[in-house]
Image (cartoon, rainbow, N blue to C red; front, top):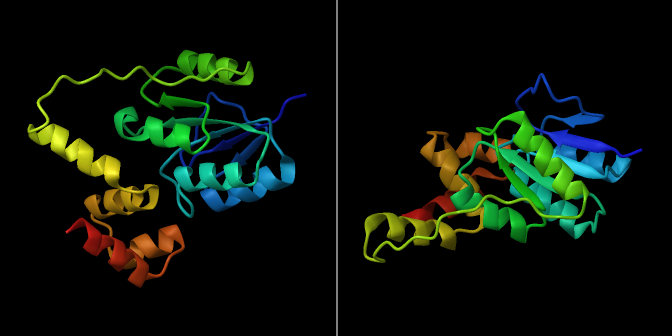
Length: 176
């Protein structure tokens, strides 16, 4: 019988999970302990974010298949998730049927990532410049940048990411 671990800080009423974690720290602990066949996780979570969870599970050489189910824009995250070991990426704006298809594909040994339109925009265009800048950020820098954009203080970010506030401050100065 297959096991699944769902990692999301938002409750999903229609999805029944064998195991459930509400933050990244629990997710890594539960994955080590229970060795699920599938991990479905969000990117934005307390403790360790989804990208960090993906990297830690990949470093553990865990045999589980990992599927990201998130509200974050795939244009900024799907490639990062793929590099971190995810086999699929689904937006929460999709219906549950799409999630079911993604789970089926991943469990059958396939990948399931969104098709992203290729851009023919002039590189001097502001949107392209922003995209290039965001692409240059590390996973942790991107997470901190988003938290800052949501108005969180250095201390709040540090607590949620299990870092010192000085580390967050160092990352913050790199954005300026």
